[in-house]
Length: 294
Image (tube, rainbow, N blue to C red; front, side, top):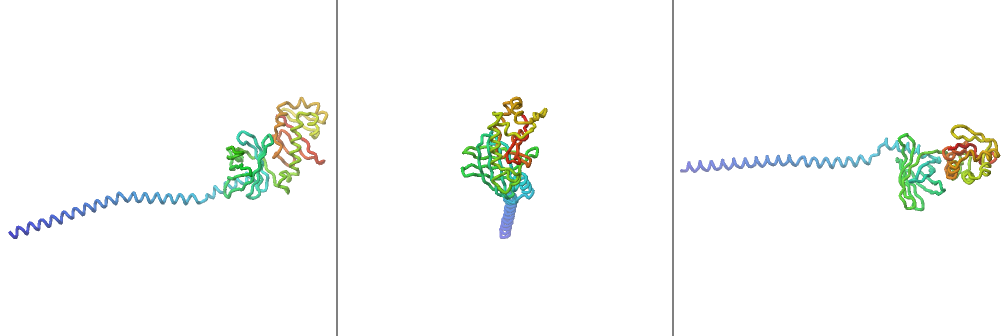
């Protein structure tokens, strides 16, 4: 009896040990599976955080090549110590703009064909081809320097003028050095800006008066019409040929021409892409020296 009881107790003890072992093994296996399921999630989370930190770090590191390109654009688009003249549009309104740069300081103005003018001040941003111009009346321009598909230097951007949102598109027209008098943008070329502008206004005002117009011309003068060249030798000859030479289209273009921030060289001042040239003679008077008919 005692032997049978001992055998039974021995079997129960074995069964208990065996069952406990299987349970621990199952739990351990389940634990391993659980860790295998959790581990990738933890790993992915850490990678996402690391990638985010790396992206943030990379975004704060300047691109030397991009900075170099921007600096080159700025130097080509807004020459230092020079008056930079641009031609283009504010929305659908044609404008001419002058931007004068002294190191990083900018002063600017633009004029419309009807004579309305706006003045601005600004500053170049370091390692950037973008810049902002402002004035005391609340107008602001946010512009950038770039090249078009043909490699032409351009300035474009948006602004707020008289409370209206507008778009600017401008092409580089010319540039010339700042002279002794920075306010006289022609001083380095030997002209007085006010005198040149006043003469341009005289041309506009006289184009319907052949006698007044003839007095503004330096003779002999060549007049090009695209096919041939007509030489007018005197004031009298100009008055006689005037009606046959200049049609209404020409007169309207003259009446609407820009009279400020004109193209200029040491040889003279040009209006409307070469339609007319004039210069300052040794006498101090300004005279028209060449005319190209449209």
